[in-house]
Length: 207
Ligand SMILES: O=C(O)c1ccccc1NCC(=O)[C@H](O)[C@H](O)COP(=O)(O)O
Image 1: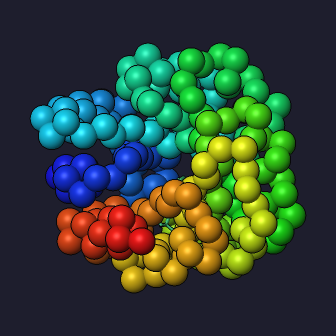
Image 2 (image 1 turned 180 degrees about the vertical axis):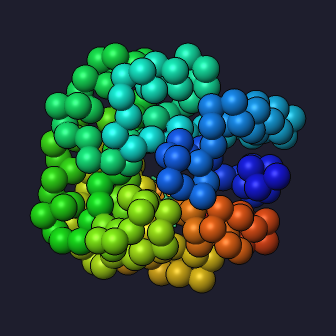
Image 3 (image 1 turned 30 degrees about the vertical axis):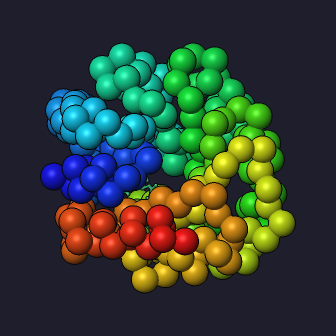
């Protein structure tokens, strides 16, 4: 299981996608089973791993369902949720939030300020191509130097087009405290690859 490889290589967080257009989409029952296995594996190894439910413009019904059934450590909002909507979600759920921002310019990075008081972490991902079916997980990179001077009020994630070969350079260039990856550790859409996962984590931990 990919999650086990990630845990064995000291990943801090694992994401479980709830978005039906994604090749990584996991219905709630499947996510529940995988998250249970991941929690058991982490506790056997005395590793702490945080489990993240990733959603896109979720309605309240879905959020309540995820909160109740999956009990994730974080919920990642990867759509066009406004700061007002994020504030509503924060008031509704007792789950720390991660807000993803699609970046193609410095203004996108500046837009993060409005979310910072509302969330545990920001995640900066590349703006997907216009015709993309997915808002994330498409392997698109952005100019990492756009993160220059961004401090953030909490540790933040860099994402988008990262892989075992470029992640060290990305961390150094963007001065990123944390990174997130999806397609860069896959051998095909939705097919996580154990050796890519372990090489990615070795590259990150080796800095
Ligand atoms: O990965 C998906 O399929 C996905 C679908 C819908 C919303 C978000 C999604 N992924 C979110 C992530 O946090 C990815 O890790 C991030 O976008 C980077 O992806 P990649 O460029 O493929 O590493």
